Image 1 (tube, helix red, strand yellow):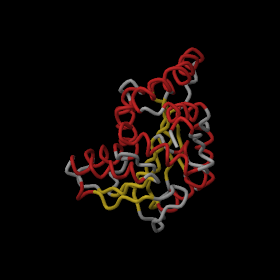
Image 2 (cartoon, helix red, strand yellow):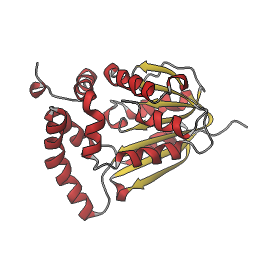
Image 3 (spheres, helix red, strand yellow):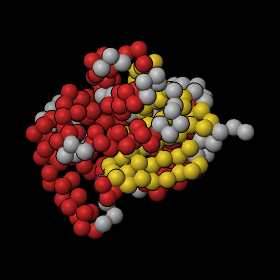
Length: 245
């Protein structure tokens, strides 16, 4: 079956796995073009936000090709990371990237699994990041609940997502870019117009950051906040797990 005949739908996880497998070889290059080079700065802001108390063990959910984990490990030289993604092709690229950066010894594991059912014990990791991934999770609340379970007391969850600007003028330009430019660039860069059409649609349909903070509070997180980036084109949503008395 060709990619032109595939309908990508997060309610059908196998199609999303197929989508990410199809774009994996050029995912980093595509992100650079589609974000106008801004995604590396956004990623750095996520890592800085997640690293508020020098966490020693990071769990990067929806890890993709490993950009967040690698940025984190370079920022905190003595730290470790676990990468989890449900697309094995993405994790294979993350392994190659970690090796090229001489960071193999700082990565405890590469886990191919669902972020809604994390195969790790309770209270294990110091920080959790999710970049550009929660909008593709079928049940974001379940993902946030699982993050709370595996996070140590005193730890932090930081989510980076592409969102919609609040300014009406910026929102109009953003909508035109997503609907008209992203699918065309995606076809040019990744030879899969449908994949990037889905991704642009998923940004427009993404649950508002305020709803994610409600999911965090419902799951037990405190000190939740939203940090808009570039006028809200991207946002970091943060929640802490209270330390034990």
